[in-house]
Image 1 (cartoon, one colour):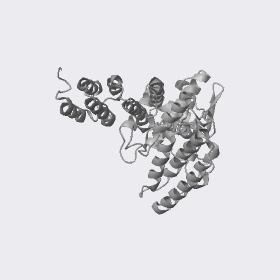
Image 2: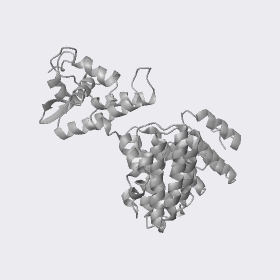
Image 3: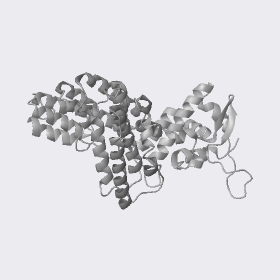
Image 4: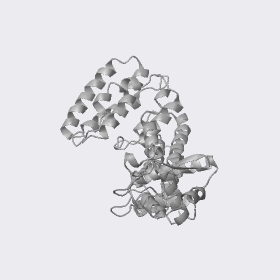
Length: 389
């Protein structure tokens, strides 16, 4: 079978990719399925894992102008993962599809579609390309755990929906006006709350509402950011146990939310989310964050995985759990100096230079901030990270 004709005057419709290509092994397959399999066989020894690794390389080493953008690569990786699962479910492999799909021009078109050309438009995308791990996990972070709250935040979110949702970009002056309106509405709703359960739901709903607006707003005046910070400070001060919220549910929701916070909400107070965490919560919170990091790393969301690991550092820093500093630094490595330096500096302030040195040594592996961390190690401890002592 050969690809459908797509040029002017052709008698076949344009092929974008998500259309059904053929039935093989009793299952339906799209053109994208065929193209992935053809490229895997021709260029990657028939291994989807090797094709995946090549695409992942594009996430970590941006390609030249005109190459694939991150969103496109993530969409293709999502489809590839879905394809792998469907092949396994059908008891088929890439060679089975390629054997049926051989034909003139197939390989050239497949290489263009998979390795060169963007698929990032709705008409070209399969369901898996739209519902990427990024889309799924970000949505979960924003509202996926609302069912665990004693009072569902959705009811309060509806009070903000018309103001914060939309597709149009919001200019700086309009953002200033909307922030003022949201602040007044939040204050009115807060005064009518009947107990901590409703307060918890209100401020949790507002956090997601603020994110929805921030995604499309020019906050050059900082009004929306300031409002979000104030509201978040109020949120973490609410006694979630008195509200009837289980510890595990509260921390799961908050840890995911913070992992996906893109606007430096806690930049000035990174330990703020954990100031009310009890000593008995430390292992629970760490376990949740490590699980979040692993889940995101497994789908190539490395930045979010690193953020989850940084949150482990801020959590231990909030209560100065010095004994946990080196292990936390070891997980972080030298890709992000901020939390590693914060751990070491906290140990020095606590008159524990040996722990500070252990932090630097634990994090000392190749990474973008390795030289900076090594220099700071000497400044703080008087010892080079490679020296004995």
